[in-house]
Image (cartoon, rainbow, N blue to C red; front, side, top):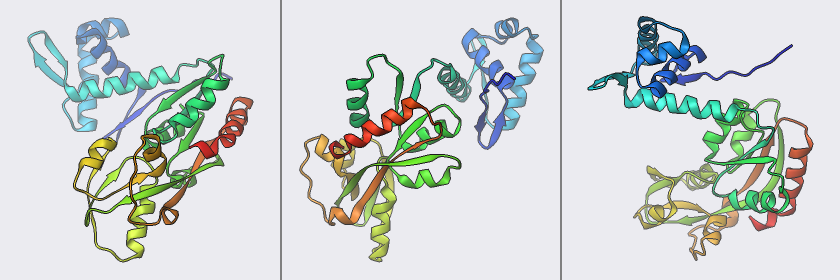
Length: 269
């Protein structure tokens, strides 16, 4: 029995098949429907029909007319590039793919740099949401989660407690910005428990921008320490503590070894 994974994408709630995506990617790479058809063994009208079907499915224009002819729109390019990136990730390099965020990057780099001399691990740094999409798609072997809530929504996965982090609560009033990293819901749940009125008026990925804003926020303590920041918390950080978890499925030595080593360095996060 031969098993081969394939990639599909959902765009605006509609599923695009691998064959449709192959056509879209070929048009992007070749720069024309005619050349894409030649590469795929399809006539130009058939290529055009595929693209029209995809437009109808996703509800956005995938083509635009230029001086060079009909090419992909910005939305079409975005889908093609996303598909291309997923294909690249699916190539079997034999490496164990590990995901983390900027909160756990140093912990992962410390362990892997010290002990992974043969480069048996591929490290991807994103946010929990993106890493979980890759994990559930089978593109990632192990993920370290800032927010442990993600772990409990996944079936047939193993969970290991790796470390603890806490939030520093910067209180600048009732208007908050949600930072993309850390279990932010812990901070807002604390506000709810005190029956405080507040609003979430934005999201930020960039810590300096977050700190320069006139908005309240919850900053992961580990990140503040790593940046050498001395921040005073309006709330006892012990009340805003959360766990860093490792999530994985396969029982293989490369994962078991990594989990063991991460636990050894858990106090350095």
